[in-house]
Image (tube, rainbow, N blue to C red; front, side, top):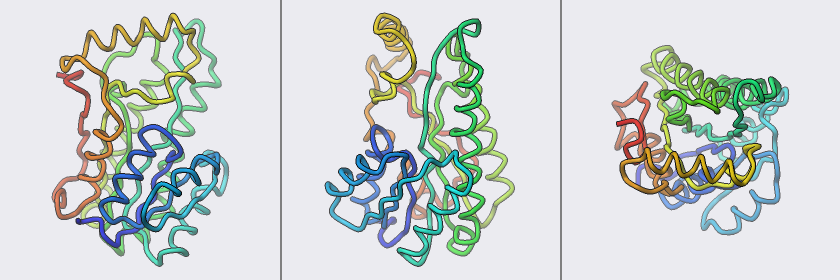
Length: 248
């Protein structure tokens, strides 16, 4: 129960993997702050959790949002021990059809926002010898035809993870989990037609040795492992694939 009494921020917690991370961290005793653009899904999640949950409605790509989220967590719990940068978005298209604005939006949410949250959390994380876990993707280490903008933003997050792990050691551990294909609402928001989505899912399933998509709770367990100093206290700079063998 290494998360008991530890204050943890989970971004993008309103649905999908983020909601599963929040629930699993709460089961392990964490004092939660859940952050997302829309408050209502966060409130619905908080109602399902048996334990303290602070709901913070913020769009982390907006100026000052990261500082407000961190300050709210510290004001509520008097400490901050862990940050899970999970907030994400996906827009899939071939280069000739892609909107450059999508690249800007994904870099803002996948790279700039995590950097801002960690930066504002640093005094607390250093004082507590805390941990950062970034939820990246195998798309950051594999070729991603038709999804190059998404893959590029996750590759940048992987690089940020490893560089910060060295920069912030030994006071703060920084790691990332790299999920393979997981069933989340993001599939319905990626800008593809139903036929394109089905074809991509078939392709990914065929390339996954375990023969199935992952589930959010499987990612959540790995995230909480990396948050827990009792289980991963000597682990930093790791890019941990949780992908059914997709990168094997």
